Length: 188
Image (cartoon, rainbow, N blue to C red):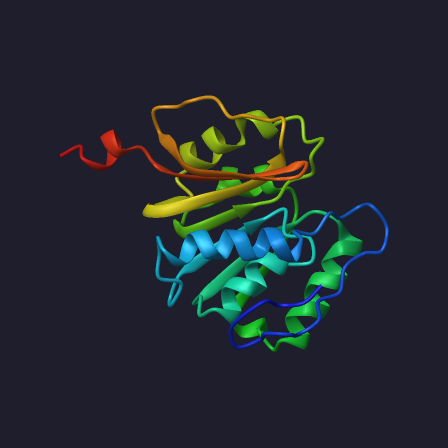
């Protein structure tokens, strides 16, 4: 797996060789960043990468100019690959790695992020409620985005806190982009 564009273009990222991690494919990562480039300036953006795995989404954002990334990953063996990847692109200073459960992290988060990536295990029991939990916890900045990679057969329920702005399907994978609901953005 390689970084697609930016300062670290072409750099190889390591990942676990077993099925414990399902990294975002190059095609899906390219599609995510193509959608984002028309909606938000990554330069100086603060990123949260939940269920970070190898860190491919957050590292891609750093490569394209993001200011900082907080990576949250539970698996100790996967954290080893994540830290190796950050060292290989020399991005330890602009990043923070949190070892632990993503939902637990959300319960304690006190800052807002311009972009929140969530690429959870497809079997995650809480997956259908993930957008509501992330927006309820205030992790997404007012003009920010939440991007969730999930199984194609999962559709998220409507909620007054957020709205879907883009949804793309790639085989058995679907990527859904969310932002704060317009009604919330126009409240006095």
